[in-house]
Length: 81
Image 1: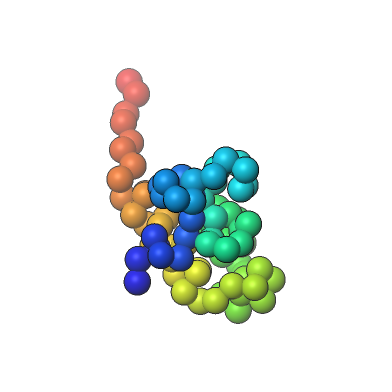
Image 2: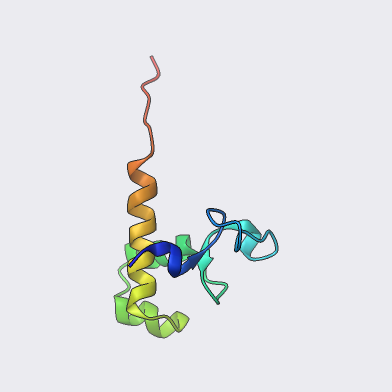
């Protein structure tokens, strides 16, 4: 499974619409931004609680995690001295 099939946002020309959550990546066919789902997970919500609260399926949450992992692995940290 690729997150690109479950998420929509700025990485996809087809779904990077500025009028949907200010151009932030969202879960397809919803207005749920991926950063919100990451925050809920970091805030101790379980998969089941997140799925129930936002009407999602487990594959949506896994796609959010895959997206975050891929984008964080590309991030560069530079020392300022």
